[in-house]
Image (cartoon, rainbow, N blue to C red; front, top):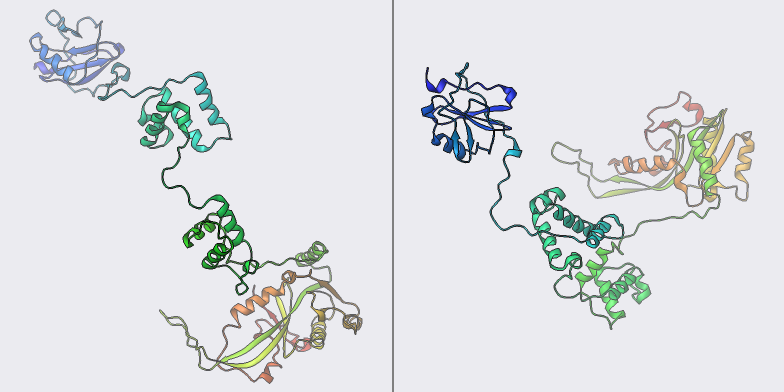
Length: 471
């Protein structure tokens, strides 16, 4: 039998694992206790095998080996001439050795030894206080955490990975702490030219921007611009350091101040605002039994514009085209009653909007809803109130008191949901007018703002069509 096929058979109970074959067909066994070089004939075991093992890092110091096998000491292999290995039952190679990290100490890297930090009890308490206290900034807590981690493990790369920081950051605050200890962990003054515009000048500029141009003698301007604000500030405060245009922009941007922008705002002075809104919202949620809810308002000044040239429809790759020149056909007013529960709109187009026009519209509405109580929601327009002739009391008397009027709070006509219909009308219908427009006299006889989508069967009895408009 070939010498390379004679392998020792060692029981797993000894805690050993096989290694890769050495030069000459030999194999080494690495275990948790001894290092064994299993051999075949005695002549093949030599110091060259030990050298091959040492060159591959497969050796560890041992003192005890099982009987019958050579073992390695600091002087080499012993017991090879007097002991022979038992023949192997299988010639298949075994897997690579499984090394135990505790048997192989970490090799020291070349280079200088990193400086260590030794903290006193007072310094450690101060750093831990920085971590817990809310009065310190996040930067101070991070620097304290760097020093504490580095004290326990003086390795910059490990501390950087632990805290998810750059190694340069860890090295910077380590060196600063080694230089001046705790005093050097705070930020140093930023180098460079000191600020030319002090805090007082910035506050005075912001106060000027918060005022009106007329308050500073500029009677021909209603809002600020950057140039006008700069010129006014320099004229009002000649003793201060002049500021540039870019400085004014930076100061205003830092405090998020935009004096040229305005947002509309409206306050309702109605003392019964909450009561009125709650009453109207309750009607929107559910109408009283045996009654309906309608929101009534007028849209006035609708221009009946026609186009001199026909509008060209859109084609693939091009938008529709509309000629700028138009033809005036007068203005008309739309009076509409919107049912918030069903989406039905009862509307009339008239030439004027007067109290008589509104009463005539209400008479037609009473015919449209003959047998139910009607809760009317509208705003505080003068013709919506009684007036000298007590128009609505007389109107209600003619219809057996079926109409109940609910007024929106002052300056809160947006509570009236008919405004939603008017908004849709202004966006979807009025901007898209046809080229030919009927005679203004015909507009006064128009029954609705647009062709009805669904008409009740008894429109002839109601005196006009009812339009259901999708919202």
